[in-house]
Amino acid sequence: MSHPNSSSPVGFQSANLFEWLFSNPFENESDFTTAQQRVPRGSNEEKLLIDEATDNSLSSSQLHKDALILAAGLQAIHGLNPNEVVALPPTPTCKKPEIAPLVLIQVPNCLPFATAFLGTIAAGLTATLVSPALTSHELAWVLQNARPKVIITATACLGAMKEAISKQDDKAAFENIPVYTVDVGGDKYPAAPTTTSQNDWRQLLASPTGHKLIKPTTFDPKSRTALILWSSGTSGKSKGVMLSHHALCFSLASLWHNADFYLGRPQRWLGYVPFYHIFGLLNVLLLAIPTRSTVYSMSAFKLDAMLAAIPKRQITYLHMAPPIAIMLAKSPLVEPYARRKDFASVAAAVTGGAPLGHAVVLQVYDRCGFRIRLGYGLTEAGSVTVQSGISAEEMRSQSDDTGGPHWGVEVKIVAEDSSVASSKAAKAGDAGEVLIRSPGLMLGYLPTGGYATQTAPDMSLSADALTPDGWFRTGDVGIINPAGSLRLIDRIKELIKVRAYQVAPAELEAILCSSPAVVDAGVVGIYDEDQATEWPRAYVVAAGDKTEKELTALAFQLRDVVEKQTAKYKWLKGGLVFVKAIPKSPSGKILRRIIKQSGVEGFEVSVYKPNPRAAKL
Image (tube, rainbow, N blue to C red; front, side):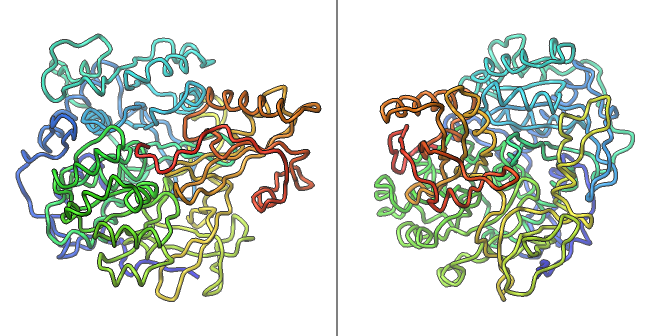
């Protein structure tokens, strides 16, 4: 069964992302802007991005100006030319994907993030965004595949970045790579700095004398990669998701088309969802520009800071991962704010990235007075579906789905055993794999092993994920109900969802099996209802006969091994279970379904203390 949105994206024209964002695209009624969603033209001097802690701010005008200055700096100082592109083999969604010289940005939410990212786009270059939480081991893989020409990283991440650079085999390509730093806590941008070091990111804002910004001579927004984000895969290594200018512009227009919470009110949002994540980047930072919204940026989430900011800033709409919804429903910190009706300015909220029970949605509504709407999206496809409406009646009538497709997005259910080449719809009401097609889909995955190689780029990952007629296979299992809404019921893919992040079991298994004390290992996700998230749990076959005391000691040793090589959200907070054997199919594939259904018994060791409803993510 398939369900296209009732509106068609025929009226949406391709555009350069930077130019489109600042062109007031929602000012007039159009195919993608209803009369209710029109955003009147206003002053470009109004505050667009405000640091919640310091009140330092950027207007739309200054962000536009500084982005162009930084763009000129990237071109003039480092010779980055937007016409020097690498053309990749065709994919089902693009005949000729192109990648311009690449700038890697590894910075948490802050004002410099916006200028660095948009400056890269304004220069006609390709940006790649990575989490500040990545270890040197993980960063080394990203560097190997992305091969950036310039790096902008947070001061706190500089050590890991340097170590990752030192691990590269291609010394010639990386030994002189420029690395700029952002002092997130100390930078007073946009105020003029008192001093700057040689590698301070502000060196890129020193306007090059006489440099005229180089524009691409040939530019197709549908094939030019604007952004590469990183999504974990079952291979155990993160995959670079290539998103075009056109895909990003379309996704933003599609989001706003269905923003029925707007109601003509000037929007004020909190920016604690990471901007390097597709959710935070599209739904918060970038969407704020054409909608003239104000974003109060927070470099890290803290519940008490969020609660205090809502009445202080008169926040109108909240974006959150499910664990934040759990806190709003259950944390005692919320009670005084609820009693004072401090959430009165909030029309509604949206959550995504992981499942959230309807009971929590009801608890938040009863306590705080606003509805949390469920949405569904992916790095490869942007926002796909969202529940409509903000009333209690609409909330109760949508208790078991993630809403209908966004404008211009098609969703199809196919039989789970369909081949890659097939995308034939399943019968109405039948469960099957969720497929997505829209102008917002990725161009494809960055070739395995990188794109700057002497051999033909390996596009097999893209071929596996995209059908010949351009549908993206999500690996999720769902049903389209008679009203046209999508209900997710399971996942085919083996990824573990830790909060809004993805964890590949194969990566953790490889790390565990690298220990001489481990014969075999299998990792699955276990769901924590209190935290509304999954945690990785490892099932381990230990070498030799060991007592329970020795196994306990080994469990903590393996915990330390994983911590040293992975970001915090990948740690084994679900514990370790020592077993005699890992169940596998005749072909050697781990039978995770049997493990998750408690089909494997063993000696369990908890290597982390419980942390009920932590107020900091």
